[in-house]
Amino acid sequence: MLIEVEEDRLIVISDLHLGNPYSRASRNLSSFVDYVIDGNYSLCINGDGVDILQGRLGRLTQHVMNVMHLLRKFEAAGGRMYYVVGNHDIVLEQALHTWVADYLTPFLNVRSGNLRVRIEHGHTYDAFYVASPRVYEILGTAATPFLHLYPDIYRLWSATARVRIRAGRAISDTPEEYASAEQAAAAMIANRGFDVVVFGHTHRAERVALPRGAVYLNSGNWLRDTSFVQIADDAATLLDWRESGPVPHPN
Amino acid sequence: MKLPRRQPHADEMSPAVRGLSKRIDAEQTFEDGDCIVAEGSHGRAMYIVAEGRVRIVKSTNGGDVTFGYIERGDFFGEMSLLESLPRYAGAFAVGTTRVLVIEPGSLVLRIRHDPTLAIEMMQRLSGRLRLANSRLMQVLEDQNGGTTPPIWESFDEEDLDDAD
Image (cartoon, rainbow over all chains, first blue to last red; front, side, top):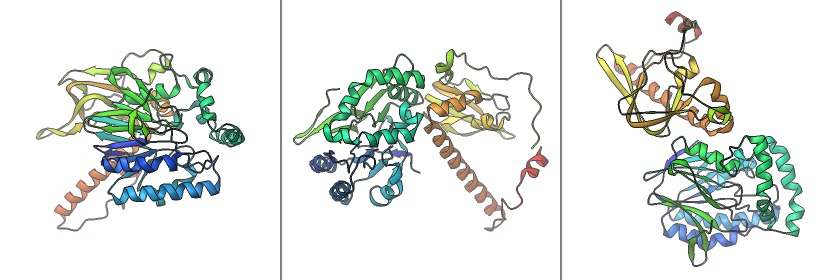
């Protein structure tokens, strides 16, 4: 299991949800992979690259074939790819290791110049997931019909964050100074010697300053959006991808 | 394995902590050259280097030997925490050094909140064991002209008791 790596230039994306009928990832990644290759970056997929719970076999095959083609192109150009396992693709761990990434891991500790960066999907800090992964999975599958009614339903999920955080605080002992369990977890991890902590999972790209100059970044999602974290030159930046190139993320 | 006699009190003072949420993040700061743990002392905590650097020193008949340096993010003191034995080596701050203090009672809580710490600990312990094994093999090969006797063949708990 590889968890300690060094990378001068690394890009982190998460939550592609390939196979989900509403995932735009395979389409949006086409020009993005050229940017990653041209910039001589390594690539980290920070969990939930594929979606078994809400996916359809036909779409999964089509999406994976498209993305595999892009990843082969990336590897042929000398790119190195890491895959951090998320809650949606735990069951595919063996297949992902065989077909997608040489380096499959539960989390990564990256040394990049003077930065120490932790990259982790983040589902193990989600109080609802930890309380019962099975119930979480059942609810995720049960939500699929609503996805057909409104593909951006996860935005509604994000809109209910305040209520969920209050409920989650009751069962997860989240300290008052943090807005969510994920932010509190990021602060706890940063406090043992990391400058930057990158999670995915919530689908909400964000940048939060932590004590002692550390930073929590959430890489957002490629299900419907195109946010990513770029690590280079002793800095970690939250960006959005456009066909014309990267732009700063509003959060 | 025979246990050592209970010490009347711990040699090392635990940092003051307040409340459950602070319990898993107790920390101490040391200045350059300060002794964090003394060889042979009876502390129970392990330490994670949050800032700075730590030098690990073992006293021998030929004088002090520096085992190595513990960098930011790495840990030390786990042998005493896991085995309840006196400190095998001493640890000294290099520059201003901040450490997180993990005591046996808070270790399980810490791992529950921060499960990747357990994987990092296991991986580093595995790496240190591999390094110790390879050095032992080198010594044995040097002593036996290129052939090595089976090291683990007769190893069991009785050997540990006899060693006491």
